[in-house]
Image (cartoon, rainbow, N blue to C red; front, side, top):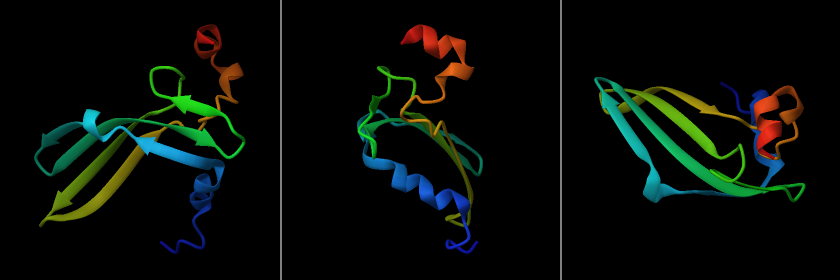
Length: 97
């Protein structure tokens, strides 16, 4: 994939800082698949701070398919709404605020 054409490359511009909590990663192995669950915290470029467990953002999961010691596929699952700007569509998030 040509990185200049990737529409998702701009997500990095929405973040001023991000920290991953490496000590609490959870690794799950099965055959050629490795899954990593983790948490993060940080601040958006607009100044909104988030932290897993305190806000709805900050949890993620990566799924790797590995063959011959090389990553063949990678899926990244996370909610990119770090600032919580889209909670109106999800009443259970609005109630937690």
